[in-house]
Length: 176
Ligand code: FEO
Image 1: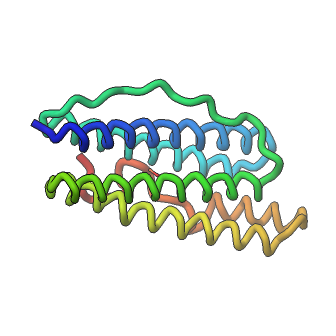
Image 2: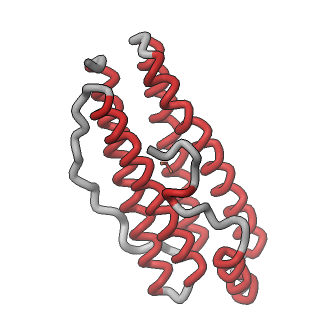
């Protein structure tokens, strides 16, 4: 059986990943409606990744004898000021997720659940990558400022370039 406190924390994390997926889906839809197809593609892919993060947790909890609880999803924002605002919110959101992962690591150590601690390390490195990516994108956007041509190029780059995240279920070798 799974340690109850760890199980609760994992279930909270399931909720956070589900909300993240929905949040990025809202951003994708907003971007698509605003002619930002590259950004929309990026966000749709990111939303899938978050769903994958959620599923990985669900599977882990159930396989370890716990009970994964599928949560209600928070209503995400529908309107965003501009592209910079979108990525600012994304970074802010990811910083919150990192805090929650760190808290999960803490609980695992307190409860001496080393198996879950080991499992959660994947999320620790994932968060590092996600925060770094969001910061890189924000830096680029701030450099562009309000320049329309720059914004067009940015969106096109996001569609074509290496800053695109890998597709969700092929992203990592230790997929379930
Ligand atoms: Fe799964 Fe972006 O945190």
